Length: 168
Image (cartoon, rainbow, N blue to C red):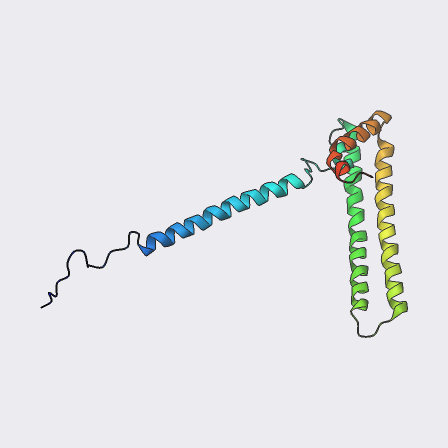
């Protein structure tokens, strides 16, 4: 006859780790992987983008290195110029929106699309001209030493860009 009591060797074995422990370990592993991947992605992003520094690159960044009243005057001029550029940028965006709407229309109207493209180009040209005038006005307020310093400063701060985009 068979004995209904199981022997110690034939009893079902308990799992070495509980399901709760395995699930917790998997979640912790996932969190650690996300942390490492996020850190690597953040380091890559920080390494390959411009280091704008405290005050930016370009003329405003250099204007902060000019001491005294002349530096304040140039910074104020650039700030005022930025406020005049905002409506021009908005105008360019609106003209591009009109152009995209015409391109997506049912009927193809060559003359209307050409006029919209011309309006967009005119708005962009006006924006670039205004930006150039602001730049030239600021350079005009600088002394010859400051302009030479700006040239050196710009070459030093744009070294990475020049290395990637040099003519071959």
